[in-house]
Length: 266
Image (cartoon, rainbow, N blue to C red; front, side, top):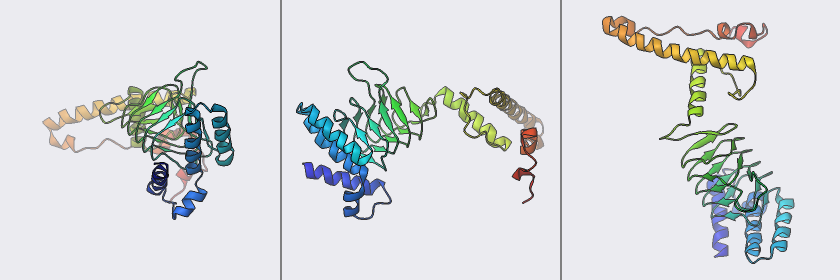
C-alpha cells in the first residue's frame, strides 16, 4: 500500500510537470515529492501520538526541502507541489486528492484558538504561486486560486479566485465585486489602455477618479448602444455605425511623456 502510494505520487509529477524526464531524476531531485513523503512518515507518527518525533521529522523535511508541512495536516492522494520553496501548510489543514500547489503558498490560520483554524481544499484544487488561503474555510472541488491571491472566505466548486482580497467567478455565479472589476477592464480595453495592476482598493485619488470615469463610460456606452438599436429600426444605416474609438494619447492626456513609445512612429 505504501509503495503503491509512492508510485502514484511519482506519476502525479509526470502528469503535471513538463520538466519531468525520467523517474530516477524525479525521485532524486524533486523537493515537492520529498516533502510529501517525509510528511506521510511524520503524519503516521503524529497519529500514533509520537508528536515530538513527528515534529522533529517534519522540521528535518523543512530544512531539506524548504517546504513546511505540519505533521498534523491531512493530505490526500496524488498531491503535487511544484518547486515548493516557501510553502507552509498548517496543522489543521486538509487537502483532497489530485490537488496542485506552487511555491510560496500558505495554508494558514487567522486565530490563536485551538481547533480547526486552517483551510480545507477539496479534490482537484489548484493554488497558484504566492497565494495565501487563510482561516477554516473550504475551497470547493476543482477551484483555482490565482497567484498572490489572498483568500479569506469560502470558494465555490469550479470557481476561480483572484486578487487581494480574492474575488471569484463561476459559470453560474459572479461575485459582484469581481463583475465591477471585469466591467472596468472591458472598458479599459475598449478605450485602448490598461490601468495595469491597480484595483479598487488602491487609495490613490487619481486611480479612483479614473475608475469613476470608466464606470460612467460604461453607462454611456450602454445608453448609446440602446439608442443605436432604436434608431436602426427607423433607418437601418444607423445600426451599422460604430462608436468612435478613443485615442490612447487623448485618454492619457498629460500623463504620456514626450519620450513615450506612443509618440514614436512604427
